[in-house]
Image 1 (cartoon, rainbow, N blue to C red):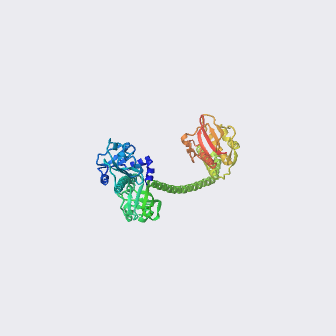
Image 2 (image 1 turned 90 degrees about the vertical axis):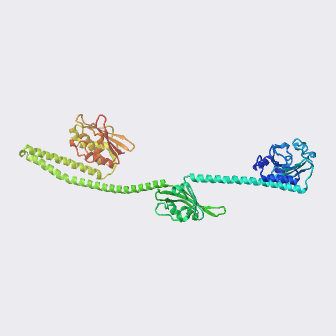
Image 3 (image 1 turned 90 degrees about the horizontal axis):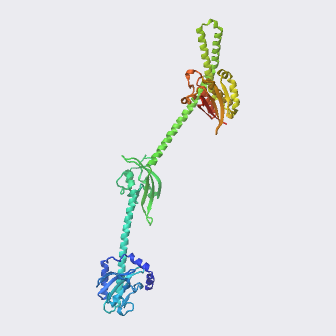
Length: 556
């Protein structure tokens, strides 16, 4: 044993670490240690004894009997000479021993020691901390039984050291546990996640601050399982019915082991509803015994309110969408019926209006000599009214045909279309003194030739009809390419259209100047319908120097 102790204590750093771990140096000895030293003096039958601890550079006399103890340099210590060997040292006359005869405790500088005996203090790990020392100023020897008792006392000293260290460690552990407990409690009370735990019987043992706030209670632990739904106001996720104890996520975890993302609602009188998303787990001890369960609860009220609002909005949109679809269908049907009615009525009016116009002309010609000026004036007014009605009927027929005529898109050369239009408008062109020109070459577009001819004829006719009285009528057609196809521009120098009416003029029967009686307010509406059927667009802008520029967007 002494050989292994000697080997262990050759590592002075490890030995000193073991010594300092006991925290004995510079600390007062307790009553038990003092009693052991007194007993050692009695056993050795000497007046003086001491408990020495050997530090790196000093000998610390922890407690003494028969003299006033004090620290001294390690180089002066008698105990420091052989204590690391782990053996009992017994010297009858130190003045004659080569190891001790020059020591100041022997020479008289510190004392006149003759008899010297020391039992090493060896830790359970084999480290030598110091000695239990007995000495006297006279020469003497110990009996074997005295040596045995001194060794026993040395073991008792080490045992007291161990007990003291373990007590300190237990106290520190208790402090650590208390600090850990306070830390965990602080964390539980601080986080914004509700935490609840229960014992194997389902009775609450933990209920943190967030959980108490959401459940509107001052306390939580101690509530039995069967009272949980009523006490805390626990309902299903929709708030429709109160949960049974077995349906609560915390209690479910006791039975199922784990519960993930289970939702429930807290409903209590006088408090706002709270939506919770819960994840729970059963708790097991090291031996597998069920200790209870724990649940983490997240407040998802804002998220669920937002989700419910979105769902309500979706339902409202779906309902309105259905209503809108029904309204669009009804409007389309109504428009189709109205257009069919207008077309049918207009068609049926063509022949009677023509007959009426003929009869009025015949009366004017055949009975001219029999009519006085007043009658002649009345007949002329009737003829003009019939002619105006005929023009209105023709415009209505054109509008109806623009919406319901068969549409078969094909390449259409706009240059040829304009040539044909100008041929049809020769009379009005000459009477108005209008000059129509084409800047550059007009493109070929995809569309219906008949409808495009009607479109350009209406626009050119409008430009002549609303010419300015202050200057000769000039109309220019041009084209510009774009990503969609072509932009066709019909620019005039006429009276123009005010900006606030440029959208309104495309409505049925809308006119810029109704008092002028130059049209029926159907022409531009017909143009808009034709462009729509070509998936294009029509807009109105200004012409530089005055007038109106119509911009048509048509596919290539």
